[in-house]
Image (cartoon, rainbow, N blue to C red; front, side):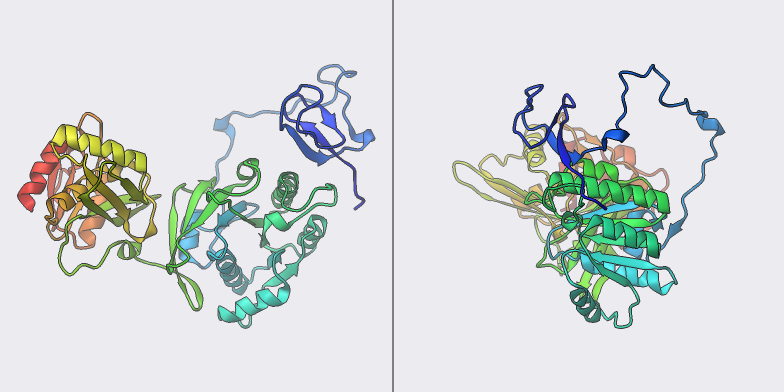
Amino acid sequence: MSKEKSVFVCTECGGTSPRWLGKCPQCGAWNTLNETAAQPQGQRHRYTAAPRGALHAAQPVAPLAAIEASDFERTPTGLDELDRVLGGGVVEGAVVLIGGDPGIGKSTLLLQALDALQRTGLTTLYVTGEESGAQVALRSRRLGLDHSMVNVLAETQLEKILATIEQTQPAIAVIDSIQTVYSEELSSAPGSVAQVRECAAHLTRAAKASGVAIVLVGHVTKEGALAGPRVLEHMVDTVLYFEGDTHSSFRLVRAIKNRFGAVNEIGVFAMTERGLKGVANPSAIFLSQHAEPVPGSCVLVTLEGTRPLLVEIQALVDSGGPSPRRLSVGLDRDRLAMLLAVLHRHAGVACADQDVFVNAVGGVRISEPAADLAVLLAITSSLRARPMPKGFIAFGEVGLAGEVRPAPRGQERLREAAKLGFTVALVPKANAPKKPIDGLVIHAVERVDQAMEVLRQLQ
């Protein structure tokens, strides 16, 4: 493919410039010029000379009721936890973007998935732009994939990658990573905003046209967000984030966007010598193993996608100085400050002169407000130095007026807790089941002060 000249187009006024400028010469806007491939003169549309409707014929439309709705056929990857996050498996022609910290296990997970798909008789392709074929083969040996027949291509030029995909027609192709791929049509360096956007757009169009599922591996910034233009996440069908501490053996894969399944679904993996293995009971890794109940510990039943998950919330309240600290790990720090104010105003528990530290065990991040009640109970338990009763769980949202609001799908949370052997639950009154749950004593409350009184009676 011949190299075409690139131009810089203003996103505000549409003006062009032969080179990058900080300020658009036509509209005066700053930092709006983006590099793009220049169209040949003969392919440019002349809208000004043509009457309306002359260039394109109107297309037929149909009401939604007349369109036949059919579910997408999914191909399991052989990794149950990955299939859960994807919504059941890989969809034909889907484009998946997965990001995570360096060394977290993205390449390992995808190589294992490709090998499992290849063993079912499907053709797979692993395009590596950061390693050589020998390095990928060495990793496969370490993972125990000695006789893997996954096709490997060490290439960074987009045009050659597209030609290989068109020729081999794999069921799924992995591009590791999108930041290393470049197109000859653009003069900018690989990894630049223009290169990432154009290469992702070409690969997306190829996936939709050929039916090949493509997985793009993306770098992340220091803040943990996917590097490159934000439009990259809008182009793809699914966005996955690989989370976890590199010093821990557990990893979480979280779906942030999914056109073929539930969002905020998570898959839990354990890193072993033979690669990543799915964790069948993830609640076990988020619960500390205490021989006896300890102060400042409360078990929360949270929801991650469609899965009820039991997570231990730990709190430590200690005497502070003139400027007491509020620190949370895995929970929103601003919400912690709000909950402390509610606890003081509506329950009479003062922590104004205390350092308060809150942690979600196992490195999980909890964003739902149903964790509020468990956080307040853990803080009160630590302040009073009195542990929760054995087998105790709690959940519920707390409002600024001191009310305890219900959490979604409360019945599923309670059934999951009972299944794992918990015997006492403190929940919002609206989540109390109409029929008793075997082995579970439920205390329903409407306000924070009622919850503190129930806790005092149980301790």
